[in-house]
Amino acid sequence: MLVKSLGILIILAGFLIFEINAVCNNVTEFTCSDGSCIPHADKCNRVYDCRNGEDENDCESNVSPTGTCSTNEFRCGDGSCINNEFVCDRVLDCQDFLDEDPAICSQQNH
Ligand SMILES: [Ca+2]
Ligand SMILES: [Ca+2]
Image (tube, rainbow, N blue to C red):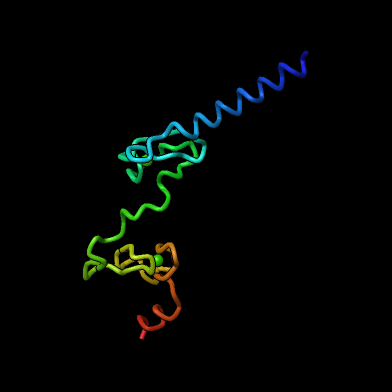
């Protein structure tokens, strides 16, 4: 009897998890990895809304829409812009470390 109840419970739990995963509206909502939903407006708003913060992953908010940076900015390999002051300052500012690329920094020193 206990085994049977447990089985039903597991099935119910399975349905519950399925429900959580299926409940997000793909058009208006973003699905967090834990299955919770947040409005699309909260994605890439620089505030962690998902428990694991994945709504702030893959954001291209730093990427210039025109694909170019200002004259006082350096363009990282991923398209994001950083201030020229941060190039070759021995601190990694670009996600791809291009601002500290030895090839670029040796050119600057000459
Ligand atoms: Ca957010
Ligand atoms: Ca740097």
